[in-house]
Length: 201
Image 1: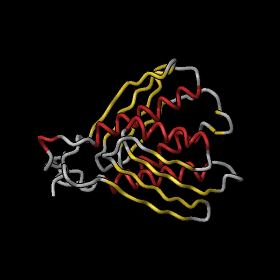
Image 2: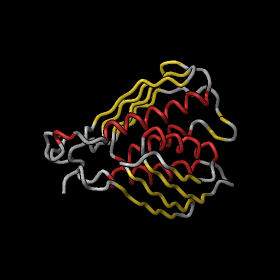
Image 3: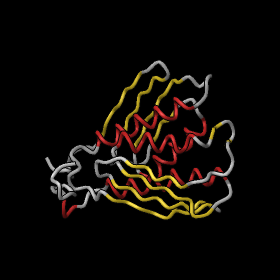
Image 4: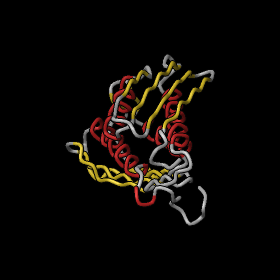
C-alpha cells in the first residue's frame, strides 16, 4: 500500500509515577483537537500546534502538577514525538524537510526541521520573562528537546525579534507546526521513495 493511501495515525499510552498520558495523532487531519494536560498554557500551545499544522490531536494527561509542570510538559512531548515517529511509518514519500519564518505580532521566529531519523535541537530563543502566568518559560526548550529526541528529528528554532513572551513562545509552536506539516507532507511524484541515499532512516 502506498504512502498516499495509508492513514498515518498513532496512539501512544504512557504511564509513569509522575504522569498518565493518552495521546492520539493523525498526520493527515484537519486540525481538530481535544487537549487536556492540566497545564493551561501548554493546552493553548498544543491547540494552535494542531490547528496550524493540520494535525488531528487528542491529549489527556494526569500529572503531578502539584509539584510543578516539568514532568507533564516533558512527558507530553515524549509521547507526541513517539506518535509522530510511529504515524510517519517508513517515511516513504515525505518531503523530509520543512522551514518557515513566521511572524507573531512583534515576534519573528525561524524554524527549520529535518524528519530524517536523527535527533538534534538547536534552540536560540530567549523568551524574555521567566513565566507566562504560572508556566515556567524554560520548559519550552525542555518540550522541544524531548520532542526532537523521540521523533528522531532535527529542530532548529531561532528568535529573530520579539519582546512579548507569550507571542515569542506562541510563534515557536506555530512555526514548528507549519515546518513539520511541510516536512511530513507527501510528494506525489516520489510517493514510493525514501528521501535518503542511505536507503533507511
